[in-house]
Image (cartoon, rainbow, N blue to C red; front, side, top):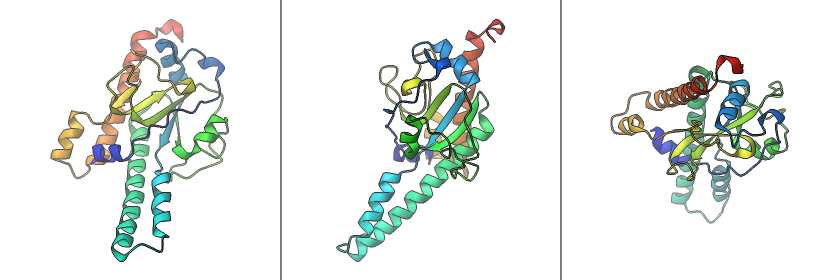
Length: 227
């Protein structure tokens, strides 16, 4: 179920810094500036790769000291990790394509963090097959990141969520709707009484909720004269 996958994909590496964007200078400290910049900018979805876990499992499989039972367990765990990662990312890609239209979007993997930090975007965005594609560009727009992990405890109780990050990967402060929690009541209920398509349905629903929150905040705080 989605909540179990979210715990599995707990990504807390929000410490890298994107190159400064001139039009985004005050996004981290001003919620209204942030929502205007996001509306005219690009949200980069950082999809989890679980590269460290996969590498560790592969290294363990190459250990000649493994007994048969442990070898089988490692093989099973490696396959499950691949499948869970792929399923989660496919669901999130579809959800953002279908349920999000507040801003432009691009997709990348979490292991491209050093390249994003250096401003090297070419070749690090993903196509519909979730493969790096040099033909996908960013353009000169304000850049925001969406990561999967825990919310800032300064603003919330540290829940598992989709988290929007602005310049220097700092979440714009409330009332900017900077996150959508993933383990909401409907997701919890879905764990108890799952639909056949529970994971896909949760992804579409939760991304749609985030999209709606962003529009609501934007419409309340940005007048027609601000365009």
